[in-house]
Image (cartoon, rainbow, N blue to C red; front, side, top):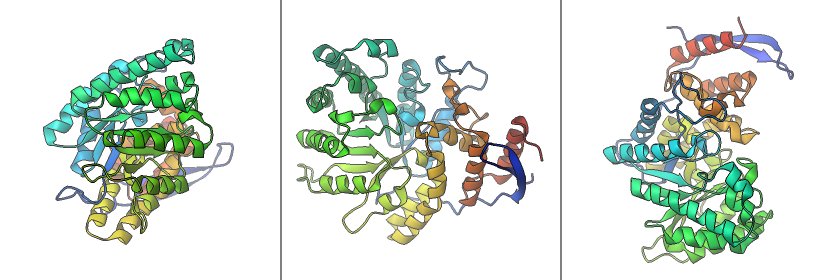
Length: 408
């Protein structure tokens, strides 16, 4: 099979203005680890693959291709990374309904146990329907509904055998009157945690409904509340995932966590970077420390991420950073505004690499990016060696372009 493909170029209004014939590059020099990765803890937040012939249209219940979805997770585990499942990458709140979420948590946890791999799953409040959330009023009654919903999901994840990631809640953002209400709900949720959890702070670029989370639109004030919560529950907090796309803020928070007194086990909460723009520098770190990782982009670049982490393990910090930096342009493109449509790019690259039978997402979300965006994604993936089967990728790109009205 040929790896040659003709890619179009577009003007600002989307008109084809020319084309470029290229031979796709060979994959990067990616390797799988021969022993567990130790220098960083890293999770890839994985997406779900829909059943190609099902009614995965906007508003319909998700119908998941479980074979393809779970096979993708096994590839991540084979590369030495953990899987963060049932997160926003899996379309929580954007196409993955509660019934499918429960099945995903149970299936993913069982598969992880079967190979001795690490899995953490999101616990939120999205079993509350939009109508129920819309009817909630700020105050004690609404807070009780949110806390009970959180507890239900925490128990599901724990019972499945996965680590809990306490996700940000749209419902809580609606009913909380200030920082004290956030503290009250998280106090109740963490009281039910059987093992240390990961707290997730998701910014408005990922979900606009989370404006004012932690009780303030001021990032500094919200951070102070967040740190107070961590101090109050430090033995129950493994770490925090911060998805604000602000490297300077993350470094400051990382240093604040490092200054906390160690727990009885001698540990402090980790900072799991959720910064899909600045992850190379944050994971590489500085003389005062580094971030661990819980990233959606790692679901797209897991072979490169694994190879980089192996370099860090071997003491080659420069080499590890160089590998991650080679994928940064791809990450910034996939997560470009509107950032919450990044799942479309994750699925497109998965399809190009042969890991799902069709380019689609539950809820019809594969329509979230333009043809021009996806063509540029293919160029960037090719440039950093992330097209893992070039002839297959070329064949799929040719078919995709023809279907979308672009012919050589």
